[in-house]
Length: 268
Image (cartoon, rainbow, N blue to C red):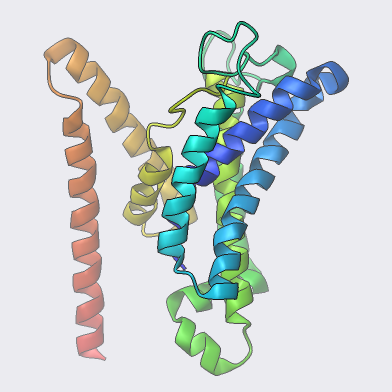
C-alpha cells in the first residue's frame, strides 16, 4: 500500500489538536497539550483507516482514496475555521489562539526550538527499533519487500499487516499536524499546510524509506526551504529554485535505486 494521504492526515491531526486545545485548557491545564497530541495522532490514524478500510472492503485503490481524502480534509479545515472553530471576533478564517497550557514547551528559552523536535527523534528511533527488533517489524518488512512472497509463505496475514502499517503512518502524520499547531502556529487557519504531507513523501523516498535516514533528509529539506526564503529576500533568487533542487534530488536517488535493482536482478 502506498500512502499518499499524509497531507490530509496531517490536517485532521492539526484540527483535532486545535479543537482539544481550545476546549480542554480550563479543565486539564498544562496536561492539555498531551491530550491534544494524542487526539491529533488518533485523528490521523482514523483518517488513514478510512482508506485502509476502503481498500480491504471494496478494493478501492489507496492512491485514489487518499488523494480524495486530502481534498476532503482541506475543505473540512476551511469550514471549521469559518464555522465552529472560528476565533471569537469572527473576522479572520482561523481558530482562537491556543492558551499556554495547550502549547508545547520550549527546549531552549527565548528561541523557537520546542519539544516537537525531541518527539520527532523519539518517534524515528522507536520506529527503527520496531522494524529491526520485533516480530511485528519483521512481518512488516517482509510484506514491504515482497507481498507475494509473504503471502506464499502462509505465515503472515498480509492484509492485516498492510492495514496496520497504513494506520500507523496516519497516526504519525496526525501527530505531526498536532505538533505544528501546539508548537509553531498555536492556531488552525485556512491553507494551514503548504504541502508538508507531500514533501514528506519526497523526504521518505530520499531517505530510502529508512526511519533514521528520514531525520537527515528532513533536516536537508528544511534547510533548503529556509535557505530559499533567505535567498529570495537577500539575493532575489526565486524561492521555487528550492523546489527544483528537491525534485532533482528525488529523481537522482530514484534513478540510482532503479539501476541498482535492475543490476541485482540481472546478476541473480
